[in-house]
Every structure is written in C-alpha cells, then in structure tokens.
Length: 152
Ligand code: ZN
Image 1 (cartoon, protein in one colour):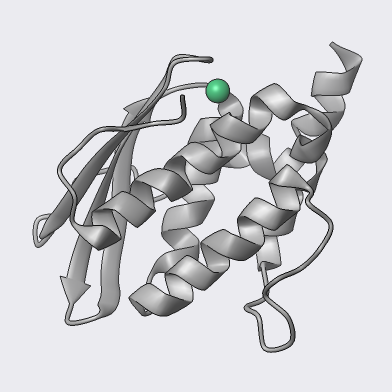
Image 2 (cartoon, rainbow, N blue to C red; image 1 turned 120 degrees about the vertical axis):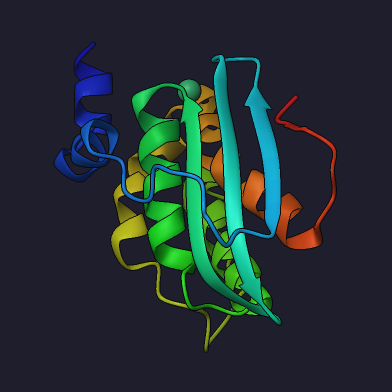
C-alpha cells in the first residue's frame, strides 16, 4: 500500500473527498457516460457549450479516488476553454499520465497547472485508465457522441 499512499497525494484526496462540480448542469446541452471495467469506475460528464466554448462543466459518478479526483480537476480545468483548448489539454494530460516522454504538444502547449498532481500515476499502468476516464468521456461529450465510452 505504500506505493499507493505516495500516489494519493494531498490534492487528489481533497478532490476525492470534496469533488468539485459534482452535479448535473441546469443549462447543460452535452452529456457523455464513461466506464472503466478494469476498476469499476463510472462517470457521467455534463457540459454547457456556448458555441465552441465550454461555459460550464459538471460530473456525477462512482469510482476510485484517482478517477473521481481526475474528473473533479478536469471539470475545473476545462471551464471557459474552447473545444480545441480542452482537447489540447487532454493531449498533454495523457502524455503526463501515460508517460510517452515525447511531447507532441510543443511550445505554446497549455499549462497543466494542478493536473500535474497525476504525474505519479504513470508508474501504475492500471491507474492510467482511472486518471484518463474523465478525459475520454469529456472528449466524447465535446464530439457529441451518444455511445458510452469504455477504456477497454
Ligand atoms: Zn479507478
């Protein structure tokens, strides 16, 4: 458990215990559901799009600390961003947790800010899916597809 304890940093635990934006949106016009069968994480992402911009974001679901905290931080991070900016952030986040090492984003890429707390996830391949579930679900909501996203 010591490895996991290292992984569950203070910020992650805080967002797990008190998830931000943990609600449906009254003005929401996009919704997508995601499922990670490996861990049992389930999530629904709600977006209020104003043209190409994410005006508001929320989520509901049940899952482990990593998936819940990731969804909480994801909704905070994408509010006010355009679809393109949100997708660029996902790209960068995925590089962080999947640890490909080679940045395709290059200069001018968005700053990850608080999302950096997930850098430890890269050492736990099973947890990468927990951390990225909310983002895959976000992408599907942005693309307005009705299918449930599965990490498998
Ligand atoms: Zn999980």
